Image 1 (tube, rainbow, N blue to C red):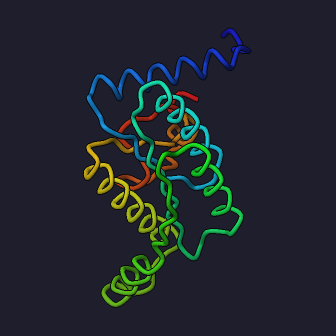
Image 2 (cartoon, rainbow, N blue to C red):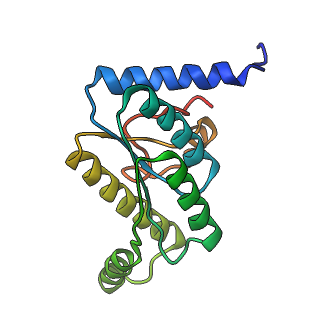
Length: 167
């Protein structure tokens, strides 16, 4: 297999593919959950380029709970303010606390995996509602390794269109 060394060509190809999808489906915005990690940062940069080319806005949200570290939310804010037309941090900790409290009453103590799954699903509920309001699409940030390893949450962190799914 030939090693790719022209990363600008890879980036421009992904941007064009994303633009084609957004425009051919007559979408009015792109919605992105921004964690402050590399995957959401790369997707934000891709979507920003699509936004510059098309005028279709990028709406970004950081959706932290008590489990997020301050440096993660700081990085998410920097990414969101740099690349998005509309960025906000919405703390979903109260929603998480309320829901997990109800689950503990019904079923007992939750596992660390179930706690993570609830957070991922709360984030996606928020993002999909936002996309619906603005007639847009939720951008996926999973990469190829995560997909191959099954490191994602069904109905949780997988969006509608994945520009970096092959990376």
